[in-house]
Length: 114
Image 1 (cartoon, rainbow, N blue to C red):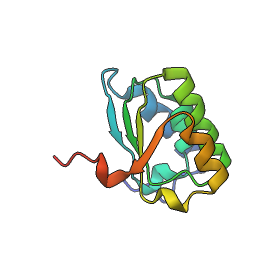
Image 2: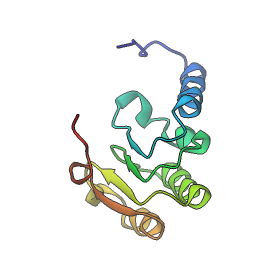
Image 3: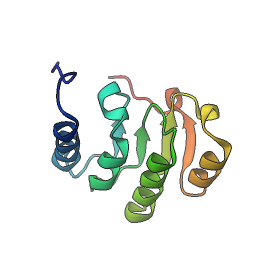
Image 4: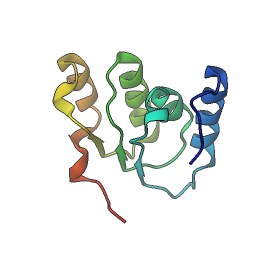
């Protein structure tokens, strides 16, 4: 496990971009419930080229992240489900906007335990 608590904001953004770019191109399922990435989910989605079918994120509690998720859905056309910790915690307008592009489900419903 790496310690990222003391990394500058710019470095975290760069690492997020690189993480999105190095994942295998055949990956269809991704669990991103991770505290360090939560703040940068928009950057990850904007740089992700994967044909994801299922994505698990803790939440996307702001318009910036919702917009990035919608843009990813439109760009890739592969994402079927987004698993969230609690989709009812989302603002109704954001939830409705995102649900026009992808099905939101409780993350436990699509989590794969290995």
